[in-house]
Length: 223
Image 1 (cartoon, one colour):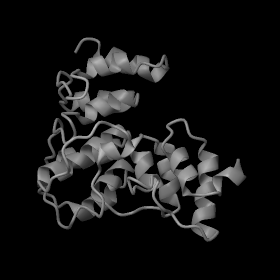
Image 2 (cartoon, rainbow, N blue to C red):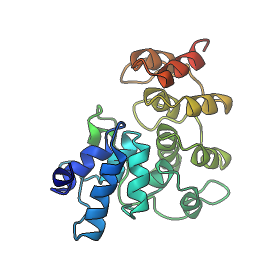
Image 3 (cartoon, helix red, strand yellow):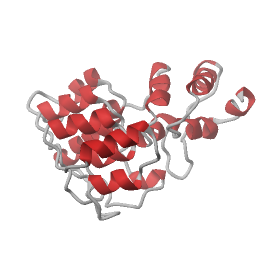
Image 4 (cartoon, rainbow, N blue to C red):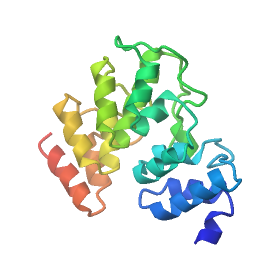
């Protein structure tokens, strides 16, 4: 396993994008790359995203935590939110919910990780902030979600194909986040543009038989 891991960045990116990743193996790879002379390159050559960004797109929170601990972080607003770095968020956003500096060198594009292409990221500040909220929700980062909501980010803003943070929390079987978003007023009846489905439909379609998936379906059963 270790021999395979140290053979290149593409393997690290693959591990980081798997929600069922072997975290110890990811740690070995990250250590080799950061200490042993390797460099962190793109998780996919065509997309130009890093292993950490790939982990965030796929809600691989344990792998993301390992990578952040090794300093493998291309600073950006959405990635700070997706990895739960609330103190970093405060350096981007003032108490009135306005950006204080550019959002970062890479804006999240879900097509880079195989989802259907949406419209290109725009420069609207509300959209930039909502990207951070959606990815924080997908990665179960409750503190980051609360920070963004408390400065006025719209809980139902949909920067990608009419998909809310609640949709992604459902897909990635994050019952704690689903419950939290509902408690804070998220609308579970919004239909996305890719599947034309509410979050209840997403819960049914993504049910893998796990306890977490069952809890998500229960939370949405009466919605």
